[in-house]
Image 1 (cartoon, rainbow, N blue to C red):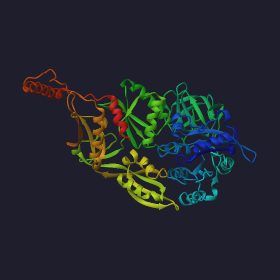
Image 2: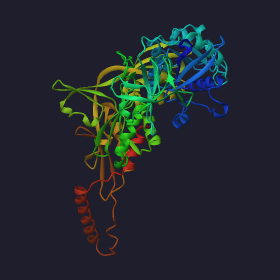
Image 3: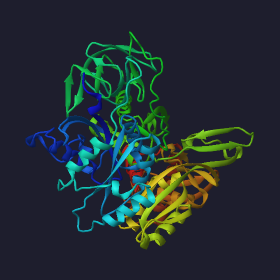
Image 4: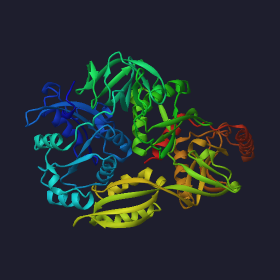
Length: 601
């Protein structure tokens, strides 16, 4: 049996682009976990999407064997985590499988908004946090500023920080020694019954569901009869192993170990994130606490462009949800787009990534509707409903008031940009609650804003104003009444539900005008005039008109009295009136794609 005192489970947490994946690369090189001929940058980021964007989307576990200065060899189970706020659920699940965390801080940027959020997650779980000041070799590195921020913002003594440069390979040995010395070994198991926490899963087309587990007690072996505590599903372990960094089969996983389990589970619905695996012969009485369910913050409809792909899209979404528990979906129909799904996401980047993964990994040709959030609608009869789809909004006559979700936003920025960011917050209908001086150069703004204003383009505008130096993190902060209305788009008098949206009354006219102009550009001309209207209730707030295609009926008239031409034109005019009454406007599928894509800009 492996010596439990020589196992260390830890993850790397940081703000986006502070060097987590690079540090994980150096750990694997330093400990010869991967041969030089097999090495490539961002080795653990196995998705093309992660490499292209330079961000980590999924957590990635890997087992490292490290011979420490005390002469003993330690098993280090490392999990590389994402840094963007939209993937914070990945971080919280990874932390649940660890006893400690390496907190990376960019020496040139200092503590950022997501750094604070990740430290809070780690301390709430009583994890040991080791601060690492990374990128010390940069000319712009300011170690003194980082030390000051560590103590002022995070309340961590500056002398605990390890100085390193993951890219240059400086201080890697010091970090590994700090992991061995400071992070505690896994706790002694309470009994011999099998308890293993499922902290992630993937779907393999040939082997079914692959569960990533952290074994807390008992020993998992090939052939062990197991069951899931929540679903009571029973199965048998077909393969078990560790990540080094690819899947490496082993005979068993002992308490404190992190690895993967493959059983006869073919349906993605049978495996649940945060569930406890136990044995069937001596099942555990109390399952592990797991982690709290996350609540989606942004909703959007996803529809197959070819309606025949609906069943395949449903299957693909089931497999994707297994790999990303923060993603939720349920079936819905649209008059304009046919059968599809109402999907919930943690943010706009999360939504983009899910759509891109559906296109790339599952070859799905899809279209997404305009993103919305969950509103609380209070009716005049005293009842209330939750609405995430504008189409389900009750008649305005029956609505007493609507409450929209608010968020508390922590924005870290250099002090010189505070004026521009304050204006941005006010433009987005928010207000600044507090300004905190972090150090001589940096400030933190705490602002309360409507979630709907945050998810569209707030992050992009913040980066533009602060020249890339600003960072933000947000958390739900209750609901607040607001004068919200449903904006409908009508084409030739018929509502087009794909473009319906809930907007603030003050912004409805400008939003309607933009949508009407874009629809005018993409809808082809017909034999009659087409009116495009943005409507709130019975009021038209914006209108565009597409001119009719016109045949030259007077071409055959050569000379003669003008009354002959006028007679033909009057006849054509009557025909067009009749055609407008019975004619349907054909909106091509690519028109929906073009308009909905451009609305996200």
